[in-house]
Image 1: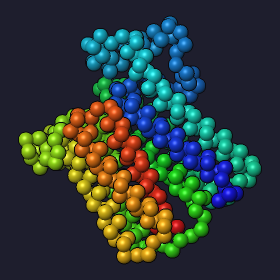
Image 2 (image 1 turned 45 degrees about the vertical axis):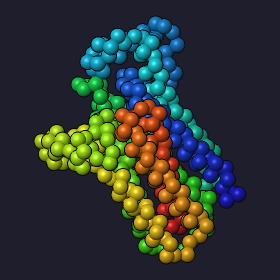
Image 3 (image 1 turned 90 degrees about the vertical axis):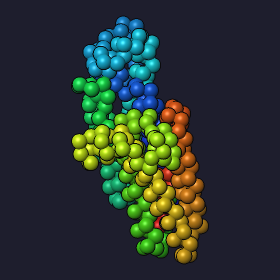
Image 4 (image 1 turned 180 degrees about the vertical axis):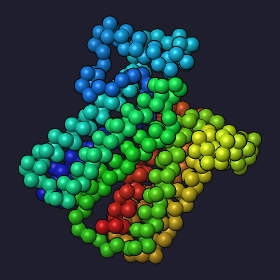
Length: 339
């Protein structure tokens, strides 16, 4: 581990930056700032406008698009309002650029200094492509809100969000490979359960993106039942023409799946926890499972209050933060049961 310490610090720094980027992305979404920058340039919009004239030109360009023409034109939307939403979208993109530099420059340095073995080089190349693809997904998402509707596609938002989580998890996994180079005895049944739990958690993250994209957290603000004291409100089935569309595009259907999947996530992690009691585990495996259980209950409680309180900004961010921590713990546990 000592030999790989600089590489480990580099990879964990990438994890921290990805974490910050997703948090800022959450603020961008919750403050409706994501459509404030109507174009994407690698260099020329690295920094915000530096003069009042440049700000006015950017604002005039923004006025040509649906969000202003259909929503903000009716809200006494001023240049100062525009500067506020512009900041969060710019900051989100700026962190993306920083992540690119933080990854590429040290990667080249470590290659030249021969600090990376062939296996780690392959994994880092995968990370490089994942980072580039994530940047493309961000613009692909924004573009969907600049055409007819003043909102981004919830499918594209969920794809952008989920891929960020997956990129983070893979970066953490590569770091863990270097932190714990010695193999442990693999307990096949627990590894299988951990893999299933991870898949269910990622599916829940996808539906979290759907909920965010459709603003589906602003309805049925009750728990444990939906509106009117119903386990499954009738709107779950009637908002869209087909069952599949109701469960992927209807606000009620998407919220129902998200709140139901929460029970499955908790159930799978508890099942893994109690199943592990039958085996002799390492200290790290035990600690990882304990933290995982703690985090999943914290996330469950945050989800309930986020819903009950109609998604205030701070709670929406806390819910997203805990999802990140939960995925981190899940990744760690799976790693300790796999290698």
